[in-house]
Structures are given as C-alpha cells and as structure tokens.
Amino acid sequence: MANNSSSNKTNVPEAKEAMNRMKMEVASELGVPLSNGYNGNLTSAQNGSVGGYMVKKMIEAQERQMAGK
Image 1 (cartoon, rainbow, N blue to C red):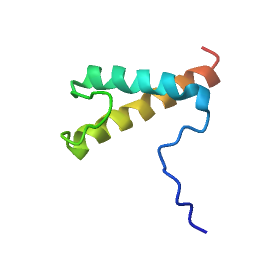
Image 2: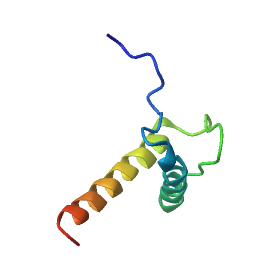
Image 3: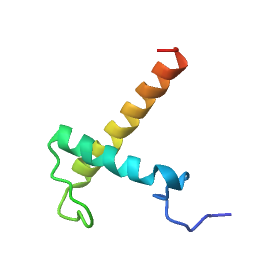
Image 4: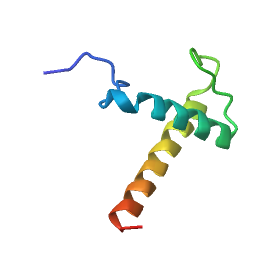
C-alpha cells in the first residue's frame, strides 16, 4: 500500500535543526545559493548536488564511527 505522506519528513524530529544546518553548510561549500524557504529558482541539479553531498558526508561519518575513529 502506498504511503502518501511527504518523503522529506525527518524520522527523528530532534535531528531536524541539525539536518537544516548541515544542508545550509553543504550548500555553502558547493556554492549553491540556497536560502531558507522556497528555492524554486534553483535547478534540480543544484538541489540534487546538495542532497547527494549530504548523503556522502553522512556515509563517511558512519564509516568512521564503525571503524572506531
């Protein structure tokens, strides 16, 4: 059965602010002019690069944690 809820919900509500900070940090690192609120002026490639890089950083952090570093 399909779930019609939004896919951008944070599973851990307490992490929402940290995720937003990370998103803005990554956008800044990549030079994507992301702002709070509506960003319809950005291309899907720009938005996708932010999300993709966030995932990359989270995977790297998890790998470091699993390696005990």
